[in-house]
Image 1 (cartoon, rainbow, N blue to C red):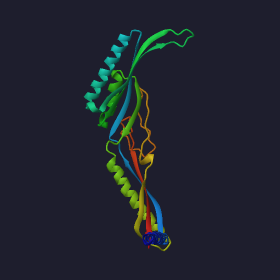
Image 2: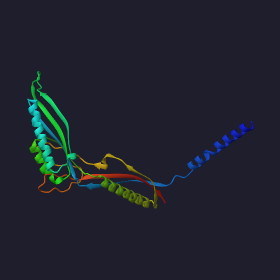
Image 3: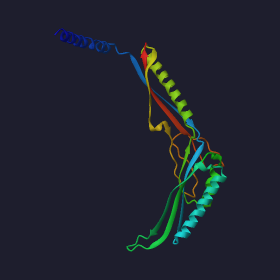
Image 4: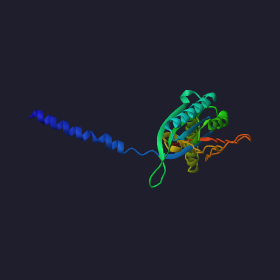
Length: 246
């Protein structure tokens, strides 16, 4: 009986003690905060181009169509290598061989079509115009897209993030000053993740036409001799920061 009384007393004491820290925590005054968002953008000239190319061959004889196709692809690969493109930056994919028929009520066989997509990443943009001309001459009959990129965007993203934090502090300082306050230590900080952290508009062009990148950002000046204006790639960062008011 005595043991039971001791156990009951311990349980009562436990329940009477536990809520106190919780109540004490809830009763703590909320710190006076000012929360702001800081954004920054870094514009960088692209240093590589990704070309998505297509090679198509047609003939009523499948062997002939395939032979023509292989010849064109070999020329394409040779021109890319001559331009200094490494093997790892050349990728072939989507090889298709299919018969083509007319759209008449009773379809008639027209020819066999052999097609393939090749992606070439050019690291030296000074060779771009000469390379695209050579590729079209070698038998490329489709330029599905040309995308200008920054090969190593990480350092520029880090720079944009630092500038975004500085912008947040400057904004918070100015806002607090208008209220006769000053900011103290940061209470909370987070980075917004959104698609435009690395924003770029692709340019799609057809074969046998001049290639002109069409970006929505500031574009660098093109030389008179050049028909290509790759523009600039914009890398953005946005952070949310809460500062204590003093």
